[in-house]
Length: 191
Image (cartoon, rainbow, N blue to C red):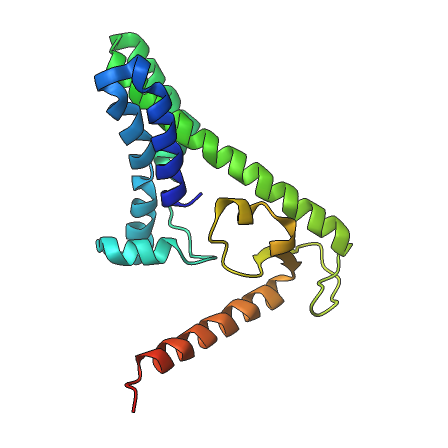
């Protein structure tokens, strides 16, 4: 899920929890959003830069090179360690932080499951052939036909297709070339 979507869902959850948590509602809210700091760590590990602006641009690119860190804050080991620490210290604030992190990870898991289901349906429909080149392959990759600007668009099967890795890579290279030409055209001064 995108950061904006996590913020929206976390805000809704915080508003629901507000009557019970009162002044402490900010702890799970902040934890459910700030857990994504490990995506920034992924950027730093992959690009060896600290720029937040570049990191946001990098994290929005499809098929980016993954860094060597497997999102450490999202890992079950990290969450289990936090739960053990909260249980040992009996600190309410640690439980609230853990609740926020678990909320975030649950949203990611639901999102991933729904997208994998769409991919599986499209792969079954393609019957092992790339729809673009008709090459037989066991590995078809999910490709969004258009930018998925809303959460609902992400779960509509008609917005996707499956492609062999070569066609998928070629399509993204062509897309970058087209968007680059559009930026140059729109940046040119009007005469």
